[in-house]
Length: 372
Image 1 (cartoon, rainbow, N blue to C red):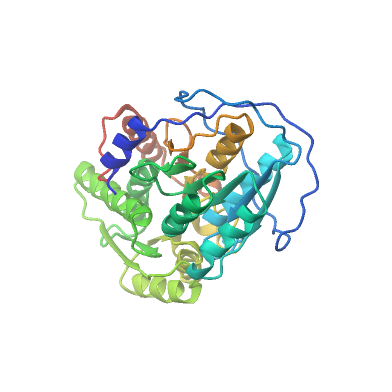
Image 2: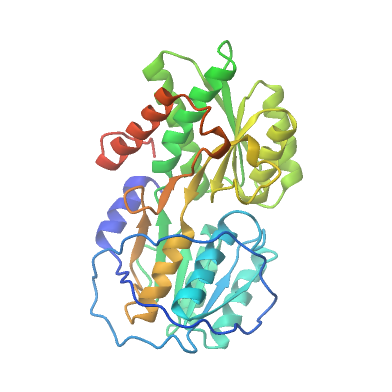
């Protein structure tokens, strides 16, 4: 789906996300297993205008939220983990009870959704575009169960499902520009940047298209010829394959590897680390989730699933669940963003950083086309 389609859908289906107070945190009951530790979430994005009359707010006591992960596990250092971080925050601050079930294969999706629905969970979060069909099917089977899905919006909308999508192109475009500028500094004669991606599906293509467009914009502005090379591995949980592809790109002359595809993309960043090159993370600030590679990460494209998930849970708890509507994370509402430079804070030239920040503001203002 192109960005224009998302924008039209978002205009028609504006969701209501109203912030509420905090409550005591109950001890969760175990559904499948104890989660691993995930990064701490930060402030949720500002809510959008309400479109429906709110129902009576629910009590946080006994309010149960279940998360069905995509393959890759809740500790994927990427979108599953970031979604779980948002639910942990909702548990801590709102007093809801949160649990997850890890999907080992696509065949597990319907069964895992059913498990939460049969236990009368108040809200089920499904993580990822690949769960779209299963979520739609189970939403019809359980019309009284509220669900929300990451990286998908339905047309026509489903009354008991909220879509959560992100304009990740807005954050990736300036990072493509940054990566191109860094590559020129490292290899002025033959600057190249690359990517190791997971499956070639719209939510992943959205990153890659904007990454390439950002590099092309750098070439237009500077008169350079930074090349962009990359590969879709076709899997989100194949770090060894990702590493092989990362090494192949580096053999071809790539200086910066953008890992965009869960554990597979992480494999590409691992290759960059071993070969003395540089990396760009995805979904979360991977400086905190890839300790072995953090010193070669220039930045990360942050897709703030944690913020969006927290806001949706809060709206449901307040009796204002945005079923049939869609939340769109943008640069402006902090649904997407650029991670800090961390160890590269003093190494990124001030002029390059200023140009990146100017691009960010230009995208927010609608003056720069990200290519998506």
